[in-house]
Length: 483
Image (tube, rainbow, N blue to C red; front, side):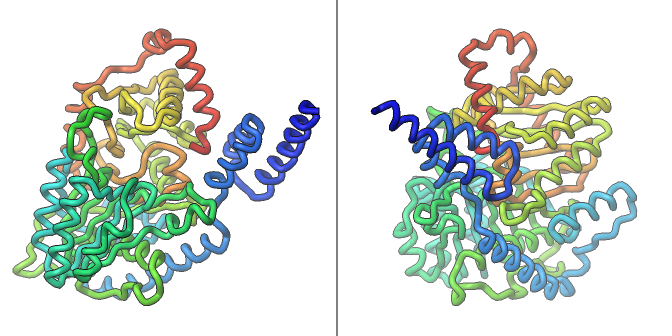
């Protein structure tokens, strides 16, 4: 009797598994990964799939795409007043090819004369951010995957409350799932002082709608339309303090003064307007965007910057295409820092091509997990890549969370996107594409400094891995398309 019931459950499970997975077009690797979960964990697998496997509805994707197109159209109305800082034509043939490619991904122009500051320490980034917020006169727009109301988060929040009370327009957008422990009531005083706080669209009623897999992973701050921040740091204690779990948190962020802040502002307004009710949508205002340089707003920067954004509402996977373009275009080197190395076949192929072409490929990963399954998958892909003459460096001085890519001596990328399938397909991400020799040298020097705190994964170290560890890596790899 019990055997018959179990057999019936498995049969029903198999039928529903096939129907559920195959009814909607999806990546083949993801299909097999979900089938593995559904067959290995009857009933439980369905619960997991209900919450983490269902994609955004076609209606939601259409809404997000149309909203972005509308905002891009609105943005064109403000470019005439800042035209000297937007110029998609260069005098360099190779650079022009990259500019055209990145422009085609998001319709984002090339911005000129940006002043960049590299921030690689949590306290350094926090201090810089707080100083700029303190000086804000008109608007403060903040978007974070994790805005946690712990000691650091409350320090930032108290200052935002103060600036809102002074009449500065403060808008805070956050991902509810990334901001563990943060509650809507934590922002009551900010709202009472005239500010606004909002969860990102995909984390609104996500539990009721059975869609927990799509996160706003961006980190964007724009102050008075002049100063912008983006990169890997979030707002929480662990990003500033040395903790027992992670040790020192090693990350990379950039502070921008210049026209590229208008691109960050545009991205913020896109995300804000799609997440709020009609009456809370923000109309475009020239004060939100970088203006012409005048006597009181002199600009001394040399960096040209474009912005690349992507999300599950667009099947082009723009961030991944940006990575592949740089990897396959390299002539001398590709240096990558990423906390997660969970690659799909197209990126693996690009890395193999680069290495086989004589390009020096180095990838730096952390020595410890913040997500166990993802870290085991990272180890799996790392040991596969060393077979392709790709150097894998393991950071030993804390937790490496930086998301950077350096191509030759020409271009680099800094942003929120990891080298993993989640960043390629599931998360909403933003990265800056930077053309500037001086900044690239700074980023390269920091990479070399980090390398001094690294061990190297070799065939010998792989041989020392236990059978149980290798088994966990293999299982995690099978699940990697849905991690």
